[in-house]
Image (cartoon, rainbow, N blue to C red; front, top):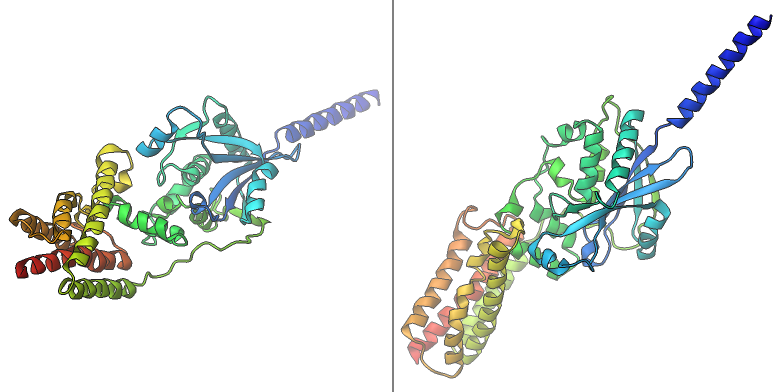
Length: 398
């Protein structure tokens, strides 16, 4: 009997230690928190973070890759050069939600179905990354931003399963199309993207690459499986309602308003040029100043920065920096003087380059959205050609 009591006592102790060990090693719960776009220009693309919920303490920590320090040395120089440093910050979820609640931005969380080892490995990796000596990373708007950091961390925890399911699929979106869509509520922003991007922004993206947009990543996570073949997203929970304008939908961009605008401007300039030469010269002067400044900026982005999305921009043929040489001709025309022969040849050359871009193949002029190509073929071509031709015709008459 004493022996039986001893065995029972040992068995009870073993069971207790086993339960304590299981409790001590209980895996955290992992979620991906997605924030909807805001109204400020740097909020247009949305945001996301990884949430790690501790089953013991009940505390949920947000691992947010979207922080930067504007007071750090040479911040502005790095921003201009495209070599910004962002860093990962670990903070309580409720603290992270405060600003989004105040801005009226919706926030949802997708709780993921990970194995215990996967969840623990991800939590440990994030805790290590959040240390001050490891937190910084070189930021890139398309390939290394807050969403791609979340995506890559999840893929590492899943052993590459996420990338395998997304890399071979595409919806035909591009960096340009996604950027212009999300920036569409701010006209100056989407025009800047459309004119400032080069061929790099027109490559078709896989679902993996498309996940640089946080909302696209959330869509992708809802469609893939975990390593056991079950849906990766176990539950989706709405944390904050969205009280401001929603994310812009995917819609075809209308080209005909640009066509009509371009034709109208061209006809107006030709008609005015036949009657008031100095008015056309004033329009040409203003437009050539814009071309000079915009073209100089495009050249600086290409040769002086690391913003690869703006390299080799074909819009240089439309907003031609050579227009700086035409400014004296415009001033001369404003004063009623005859244009010199070299000015006429330069006028024709600038117009020919614009025409080459507008009528060339995609390898010559790469904007792929219908609105963008119509912008090129109509507005900018007519802006360039009409003032030149009208000024030349007026000069021949005078």
